[in-house]
Image (cartoon, rainbow, N blue to C red; front, side):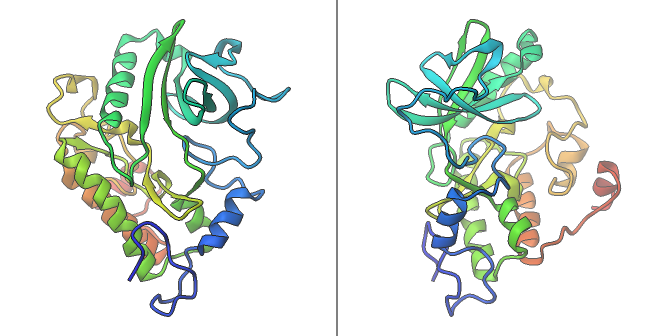
Length: 286
């Protein structure tokens, strides 16, 4: 039987053709030179300074030449997404590391985007589950808006798929069940993730599964749904449920279950069930 939080050692007789790394392999990878799967919020970076250190000389610093935002001292830029940049930071008062998602400067002047940013952060903060990345704070410092999240020392499942190929049945089911547990709590709170995929599922250096990037989650009873335009989907086409592709406003927890099912298929086969030369072709194939 699989451990509740740790992927079993590779080679366990109860697993068939295990490809998910053993605990020792995970630990070695998280401290090695590989950068696969480490460019977004919650992804580990080898050789990062200890939590008590200031940013090293020559390291990238934050927006507007800032080295600190509120209670958070910026250490290193981790990556960049559609809504802004992500930094590894040290929370001074609580002496802990965090991943800071900073709203892009060109969006900070758009009140609709700012409202969406804070709404997403509040939705993420309500999820308190061991299989979900936690949110520490959301704030603004001299016009710079940011959300502080749990820093995950690990690697995405997409990173492991890229490196190792398909997973064993036991490991694929183990990861999927852990994700389902986190989603169950979110759905009970009338929240939908809307972008479940291997790249948004983390495996920590200790083998714990974490669902990341609830940044597309929304409360189903939110009266500001008009901020999401019909037909935009807000997700990844390969994993997206057909009803989500048609109208992002009209989704519920079943859309996440559909995406989790596609993700399980990907874990088991190292392939996607629906492909195409464009997002529209992928959607129409379903």
